[in-house]
Amino acid sequence: MKVKNKNFLYFNFYSGVSGDMLIGSLIDLGIEPKILKDFLRKIDDGLSFDVKKVTRGVNNCSLIKPILPKNLNKNFDWDELKNFGNLIKDEKFVYKNFNETIELLKESEEQVHKEINVKPHELGNFDTVFDIVCFYKCLEFLNVENLYHSGIPFSQGEIEIDHGMVSSLAPVSLNLIRNLAIPIYTSKKIPNFEMCTPTGISLLKNFNHIDEIEGTIKKIGYGAGTKDFENSSNSISVNLLSSNHNLDLLNILETNIDDMSSEFISFVFDKILELGVNDVWAQNILMKKGRPAYKISVLCSNKLTNKVIDLLKRETSTFGVRIFKTKREAFDRRIETVLTKYGKINLKIKLDSGEVIGAYPEYEDCKNLSKVHNIPLKVIFDEALMQFNNLPR
Image (cartoon, rainbow, N blue to C red; front, side, top):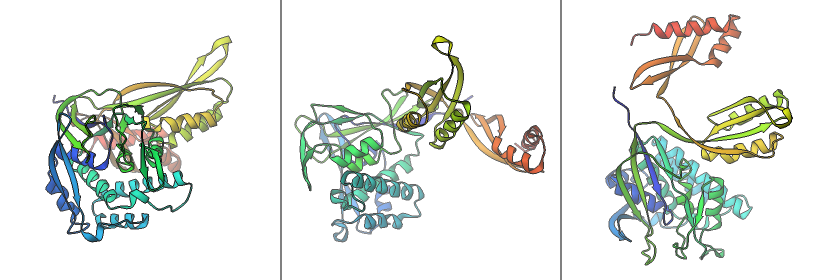
């Protein structure tokens, strides 16, 4: 049988990250500039960009430069920035992510200034819109399974912004890094310049950070920043990789509880699941001095880890949480609906290279119909499977 390959992107931010670097790297990877230029005309007929090949360090990179018509070459407030999204409503993926990213930037700016509806300042120019919509149009075209990135380098220098001198990682950028739980590392190779921009960082909202990657490199792209430094390449790389396994890189969080009733733990489970984790479970264990206890385990993405830890800290009696990195191979699946004499029931279908190898009725659907018709749950389950097995294949 053929093994289905899974494609994913890995971005290496060895000298920072910005919107133009991200877009440049994806164009260098193989995105046709014409695709983006045709798309940008939906916003304004005069909106476009130039692409040129430049050398950064030893890397041959793509550098992009927006071409803005006069009416876009000015600063906008948050509402005006968001209104540009209305011009691309038919582009559902780009439109959704554009709105989410603008809101993320706005919230971060407000948190830094401790003020509602604060002006966008440096983020108010049209480059912010340009970077966001072009980046998500590239991702839509590539249609990859997962997005991963390295940590972000942290410079110890200073830069000057509207408010005066600040760390070269500006307050809004730092706040975004905190909100998105992105790992950072100090680097003496980063020059006194804003190598990590708020827009570039905000575009990582759907990414996962990983320390190691596993796969076969199919393509490599390099995106350049505008400045050419003597001691820094000022570029990023993106790798398009394929894997014969659909691996999710996740964390397992564990904690032992010996002084809470099972009712409280059930309540905690509900709240953890509301966060969107992959799974949560408990095991009976025996602790020191013969104390019976529960070991609570949570399987979740790196982005949800801090939220889960905070919830466990507040909602349980634990004084600490253990964190383990793990890999999960997720089998192909799809959802199908069958119409039974009791009502509609969704089934989770397990696949192997397109072949159906298992079907599992959704518990909540069956439970609800069991209550409505006052019929044993097993009868509803069996009816759903019978109807599914009778479907033509």
